[in-house]
Length: 234
View 1 (cartoon, one colour):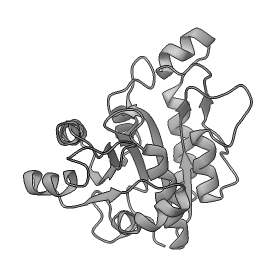
View 2: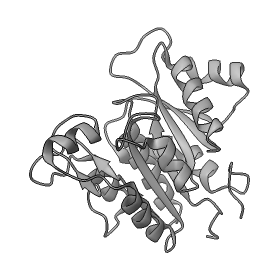
View 3: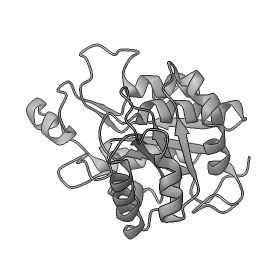
View 4: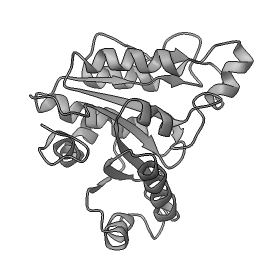
């Protein structure tokens, strides 16, 4: 596979707990199944237990790609708080430069790097940086994940605008089914297409594993690696 110009994709969301890890891991496995050499990275993860656990987001991403390294988030924090708040409590230094350098090193040796942020587009990763800055500094494209519920249109359009103003192309939008559906669930994707004219919008139903998610996200994988992928040149 010939590398695109932007072979780093940041997976961000409209909020926390919207399904980013399930989408990221499912997308990673869908790409692997298509013969793409993928590494998935989570720069920082809060709420991680003292002992490394298979349930951590970073570990799930690594399992999905079957990668040797990294096996967990680059920085792990125990408190389930915004990363800079958790880091301050634990005396941990958060370094965006170090995260970006490591991610670029993976990008230099693989077809595609998926990078999962924390929280929403503007959720703080450090006291000075958000996922928007992460994507900008990495010259990355973005996949936006939104919970498929009432309010998702507003939140998704705001995320798209924030990224567009920063020069970050939106490669895809995925509406992820929430635990409790409401009357808008299953209708937000078509409503967004109609309102915005943006058509690379997918829906992920409630699934039990990233292997199942991979089967649902094949179209998104094709959008990322196809010749007409936003922000890429092949």
